Amino acid sequence: MVKTVMIVGGQRKNLPFFWLAEFPGTERGKMYCQINAGGLYGLQSYVAQVEVDISKGLPCFDMVGLLDSEVREARERLRVSLHHINAALPAEKITVNYSPAGIVKSGTSFDLPTALVILAAQGKVPPERLKELWAVGEVGLDARIKQVRGVLAMLHAANQSAFRSYLIPFENLGEGLAVGKLPVMGVCSLEEAMEYVNASEQEQERMRRDAEDRWQSQTKGGMEKEKKTPDFALLCGMEEAKRAAMIAAAGAHNLLLAGPPGTGKTMLARCLPGILPPMSEEEKQEVSAIYSAAGQLEDGRLIQERPFISPHHTASVYAMTGGGAVPKPGMVTLAHRGVLFLDEMTEFKRQTLDVLRQPMEEGKIFLARSRGNFVYPADFMLLGATNPCPCGYYPDRNRCRCQDWEVHRYLARLSGPLLDRMDLCCQIKQIPIRKLWEKREASYIDSDKTGSKWMREQVLEARKRQQMRCRGAAMRENGRLSPGEILKYCPLGLEEQEFLEQASEQAGLSMRGCHRVIRVARTIADLEGKDRIGVEHLGQALFFRNQNVLRE
Image 1 (tube, rainbow, N blue to C red):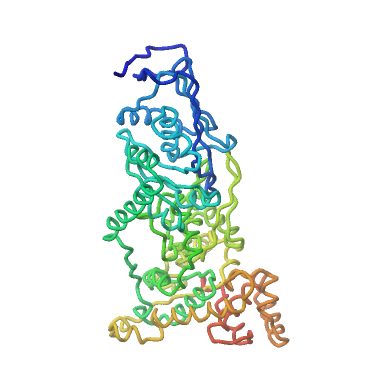
Image 2: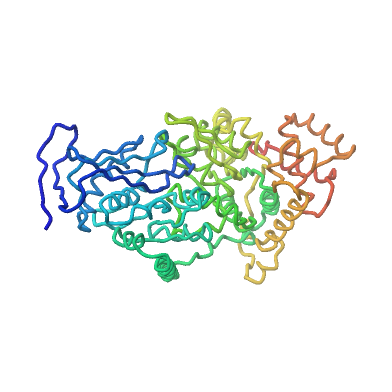
């Protein structure tokens, strides 16, 4: 029979009023147990240890180890959930330590390992089996194990330690299966977790197979659906803009579209993901780990398509970069390996736009916060769309109502350093209405050389040439080449050097501008299947470099 005692008040600070169970017949001595867990600090994952010590003394439940409120609140969740499975907390001094102590512990992923070490200290599960076990998960009041964020990233870190078994929530099982051939078990309740730990190795293997089959059957109906993107062939009379978009996709260049409202700028941007090359398996893992840490990974499946992030123009600096003492991934990080589309670019605050300058140049963003310094990946293509003035019709003075100073102030939101980082600038003009009546059948779209199918083939061929050229080194798109790599992979002849020198003097190009012209010219040559950059390639790159399109 279980003897129940009630702790009334007490001298300890914050000591709650609750019922505790005392188990007669158990040894009233000191009990110690340890288990491995996973933690997330920003986007950096680490292996943590959860230790519990149960000894004689004033009944209390202390949790130490530089903990956030989310972790501390687990005390009440575990008290109720353990009572539900008839394993109430003993009326003794319970101390739980989370290490490494120098890292702030946050989130609810420590609930499950904490519950298991307490159960092991009570003799409910063998303590020796927890030494080679890694576990994460949130425990509900009814002892159910709930989904947590960052499991994919944490498993990558835990995989380096080669634990005997990995215990995660059933809802996160897809992330566990995506890491590789790891002995990952997805559990739905605390009782199922206890059953798994107490089982033999053969029985554990059977339980893992059953959980995997159950997860596959539940998610079969939610298989990833191919996102339907508009076809470029549906855009009439925009050959110049389509050419610029294909160059941008082939070399991962930044693109700025300017033109009156309703000319198809947003439509063209929505078509761009349809011609981007597929991600490699390494890129899928990298991007999926970011979305897992942000809590935006759907169904626990790896992301298959490149991200396309389009924030509203009211987005703040912290929404763009990542906010909080331990910042969550911002828009620039969520767009990693994909496209960051800023529609109505001049409507964004200038401060918000200028924070893009560093990640556009370095492919990552450095954040200094109260709890430390963080480095997040931010290698994206910037695609911007803007009107030439507040009303949108400048320089057509028959329709434009803006004063010159209004136009100047409006365009001044795009700073010179930001515009200098735009590789391609293209103006989109009004299309004659008769173009709308052109027939666009499916057979025509598939065969059209301005359609997405044909453009994607050209982009893939250009990417293959870039890969062959960088053979033996890390794959780098033309838009990401460093100055040293430009000298190595983009040599210019004497004629091309003289042409670029004269053009740069006339246009007033900076050294950065010249490098970006060469990168774009290299991509144009790749699209045409040329091994060397010619004058015609430089000329076309300079044509798209013209930033006066905002005022024409």
